[in-house]
Amino acid sequence: MSTVSHSAETSVSESLEVAKVRSWKAPISFAVVTIAALILFVLLAREGDTTFKLSNDSDAIVLPPLVMNAAVTGIVVTILLALITAVSVWRTINYQATWLWLISLFAVLFLIGFFAWAAAGGTVPLPGFLLGTVALSAPLIFGALGGVISERSGVVNIAIEGQLLAGAFSSAVVASVTQNPYLGLIAAMIAGMLVSFILAAFSIKYFVDQIIVGVVVNVLVLGLTSFLYSQVLTENTPLLNSPPRFERISIPFLSEIPLIGPVFFRQTIIIYVMYIAIALVYWGMFHTKWGLRVRAVGEHPQAADTVGIRVNTTRFWNVSLAGAIAGFGGAYFTLGSVGGFTKDMTAGMGFIALAAVIFGQWNPIKATLAALLFGFATNLQNLLGALGSPVESEFLLMLPYIVTILAVAGFVGQSRPPAASGSPYIKS
Image 1: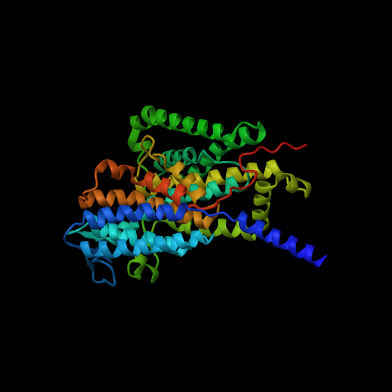
Image 2: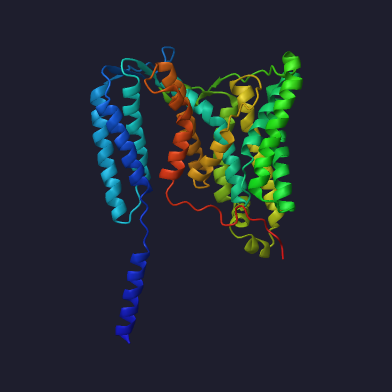
């Protein structure tokens, strides 16, 4: 009997071994990027020194610039990237995932090499670059937070683009008329919520395909805002499209920290609200009864229904909350950045925010980091253009979207959305 039992245990153990799955996404992506580094940094090496400016002249503490030889830096970085790729391959062969910190180190090393190569003979203003990255990431982060809440409750939020655009339009008009940017923020949240009402009503109440509804909502908001901009706002720009912008607020002591202080602690009220929103959504999602209910209706609505949770009502109000958060992010375009509304000013950032949700594995913190990555790529395009980089301008325009594709397809790894996301719940 014991022999039979031992044989059964052995066969089960062998089955589990066979069931292990290797994911070659990370090693293959590492290898592609390493080959690109070899071509750019070594075979097409550029001569000269690259200066990394670590602080502004007006800062309380001025750090000395960091000077790196472009050719030498390229060689060293390429060797290190090859070593990391080898480690990733070895771990994959042994059915082990590549460490997240190793992926982060790989990205940082490549960026150092790329900056040194692209700006050879020039200066990279790191404080200004990082400040711009945070600014460009703000709408993406708000959109990603809204996407996480909506999808965790079981509704795919394709309409993030429309929510951002509605928030930007409404905040511009209300803030212009009242000359009060805070009222503009409230209007942006209401507009985003109204857009999400359409998504929620058709997908939850009438069981229309959520993807189709989201696409239609985006087209509707784009057409409506473009029409109103052309026919109304341009006819009376001083009254309807000249909103006051929020001033930057410096937090004592924290804003004086070299490099980090000016980037994170000399910001507008919208950015500070963003910090709070990230913490609240994460805490609420994983440490409160509200978050437990949201995740329950997104994972197993039938089970949630049996314990007394009103599934469709919970979904409806959480989709509305997601729209309010995304609409708030849309206000950053007009009240924190541009200072006025223009046609299609979101330029597809809602879809990148949705990619950040997927890349972040439906986790608020990871989605925020993914949004920062995409904002970084967008700002990198602007910086390279200003530095006169040898990279073609057409490629620079594609850069944010290339990073999005590489991140989602290459580095996202094993990712599972909420089980009931995209599926309407019909109570039996």
